Image (cartoon, rainbow, N blue to C red; front, side, top):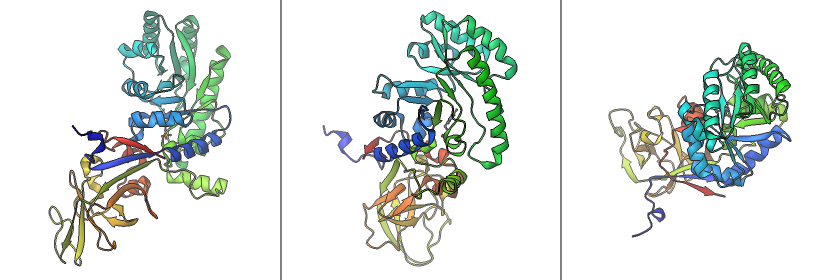
Length: 392
Ligand SMILES: *Cc1c(COP(=O)(O)O)cnc(C)c1O
């Protein structure tokens, strides 16, 4: 039997660029400064890049700390990691009944209430191994974390159980550091966090990781990074928001237009070409009518692959380095594009949905703006089942 991996069985391909990742990590590490641990955030299947492919590539770029949302993502990360030094941290959900599993596998996790702390202590005693915890402080997001009024009880408990509980970190999360509209709120969170950190450091002076910053905070508020940053979107080469990009442009007078390089490239092929006369409807219903004789190409990408129906008559893709607009309704598995103005267009031509092609580039940001989605949302909807390949 032929090796199916050699056959083009998939209707689109996802490629990850190691050079781009290396470039981004280097830029972000320099921003963070010496002595600050870089934790690569790989929740949401590594923002659609695929944990299994992305994690070992990041290891090659020197990353050895990864943050996931949940225990199921930690399972995927443990399976993907190649470096025995690599550490995994769960920032969100682990069922109380799975805490023992995390402890066994030396996966650290956030603790944000007393109930979870008790469960972690019990699981650690049963496992005969300490739980490595990160204490999450509530500083103003009002989602998860300990309130200041709970610190005393918490500290007492940690002191009494220091054999089974190791405080590996103290952390918080900001409520939207990517927008200047939240400036006052973020500054107030930082103040509260500083105070909380002091209270814990007084009792546990050697806590290895104090962390609060995500991509936006690292880029927009570099004054308080503590000893670790948790970087998601920026390592993949996307800006947390246009505002943060503008801020850096201004502040640093950047020599290069964009110091971040997109890691992912999503491409497909033209399935079929058709010449359609003037005044005809294309595809389902009456969404699009030709205004001249047009060459219409079909591409095997649809909303089931994450190319939203809201891009109907709105999105565009690249063919031969030029933009080709999406015309008509985006179907479940297909879309139609107008390639009339692309010289020499042929069946089988590469179609780029995200990424570069010759002089053209489609960033998810423009994709996102068109579809009123953020980078984050578009990326995490990339087809999970599609194999990812690493390119230089
Ligand atoms: C997602 C997430 C991050 C990373 O955010 P980016 O904006 O992608 O850098 C950091 N910390 C927590 C708690 C998160 O949930």
